[in-house]
Amino acid sequence: MAKDFDKELKVMKMYTDNASLYIKLSTAALALTVTFPEKILKMEKPVVDARAIFIWLGFLLAIGAGAFYQYLAGKYMENLLPEGAGFSLWNRLANQCGVIYGVMLFCFYASAIAFTWNAIARI
Image 1 (cartoon, rainbow, N blue to C red):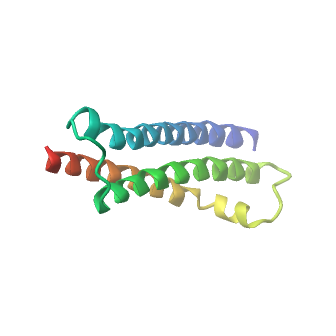
Image 2 (image 1 turned 90 degrees about the horizontal axis):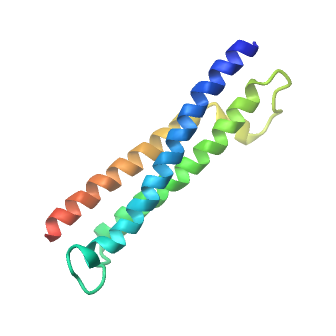
């Protein structure tokens, strides 16, 4: 049991570290969406339209999903302990934490593609 737990812990650490990286990248990309029009395109102020709001929401969802994934990953590991974690909604969701990870990836890449497309359209 201890060997299985140690293997799960190593794998989960890789995923949570990766989620942390996506949180940082999403935060930086969110800041870039505001500074890019001003610094690169020399606009007076950032354009706030439906595309910009879609991009901001996508990066914010990626940040939220990444943080939630990290929490659920901890709960998943807690469930693997011999004494278990007891019953709660969070523990049941922890067994499906890969879905949240997928949401994080989708939101990040969809927003990154939308940001790139929006930037090219404005040049």
